[in-house]
Image (tube, rainbow, N blue to C red):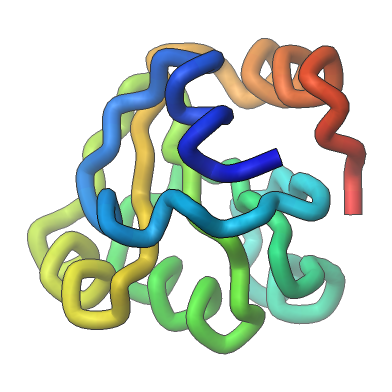
Length: 113
């Protein structure tokens, strides 16, 4: 499934990387520990987190993730927006909790990594 389809179906608000939504999402990964994501997420995963700082972008770039979804209506910090814009990494925002968002992703056929 394309990231753009997830944005539409989950009514996500795109904060950065709108030009990069035509990427395939292979799986999903939910974690708030950067070291956990670095160790276990895979290329093409969409990452669900409540972290909002610029280091999330560095991890997404390093792991070649499809994008980052922030939960609970959290907004990315300005430094994260700047870095994500420079790296063309999509950051999206959802008002849902991690639990509810992961459930909806699963219903759409996105499995865990």
